[in-house]
Each structure stands twice: as structure tokens, then as C-alpha cells.
Image (tube, rainbow, N blue to C red; front, side, top):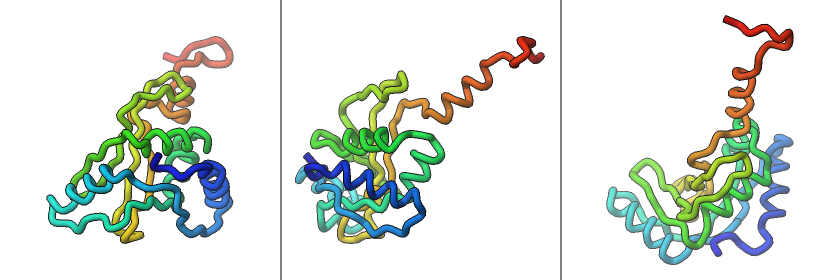
Length: 164
């Protein structure tokens, strides 16, 4: 498994420190499989970029916390599921000269009524020679924030009168 054993508690604590505004250092959370590592290097070389030297995956988490927890209103537990699913041993690599994605091959029930295919966005230059898990994206979701906005639009006014 690409994630290190028992890493979930460390990721939770790390994201809590990020939420409190602490400047955190990157933590190692796992390793790409040999096949994933080779696929990333091959992809990068095909577009004239250097390969990935080290298969270890690091996490800083500021962007991930801001986009998934604050903006989209996912819980930290939701984000942990997204990380675990997207960085599974069976996940496949997609990318271009601008981004590298590790995509789950398995649909997952997100707990909010959607079936999602999780993607991990890797940053490959900032922490060179290692990959940084920059963000996770539950493709096919309706985030809790969007779901709440949709419900507000669908609710009639408190007085029982509807707007025209």
C-alpha cells in the first residue's frame, strides 16, 4: 500500500496544525508503487521534464486543507478517505507537462450520496527529488458546500410564500 501503516493519525494531527495557522514542515506519508513511480518518470521524460528520483510522497497540506476542508466543507475524515483511495496500490497515473494525477481505479461512495473516483494531484518540483501530495479531488462529487447552496435555493421562504 502506498500510504505508510498507521499514517492516518499523523495526517489528521498535521491538518489540525495547518487549520490552526501553524507553519508546518512536510511529512512523509507513503511511497508510490514501483509501477506508479516508473509511469510518472516515463510521462515526465516524454514531455521533456526530468523523471521523479524518489518514490516517497510528502504532505504539507495547506492547499488541501484550504480547498477541501474550508472551501468545500469536507471533514478531515473525508479528506483521509480521498487520500487513501487516490493513492491506492491499484491507482493509475495521468498527466501532462503541467500536472501529474494519481487516479483511483475504484469508484467509492463518498458518504454524501455520490459515487466518486478520487484523484491525487502531485507537485513534483517543490520538494524535489520527492513528490508532494498537493491536493485531492473527489471527481463526481457534490461537495457539502455546494449541496448546502443547492438546498438553500430549493427551500421556500420561512413565511411559506415563494418568491417569483
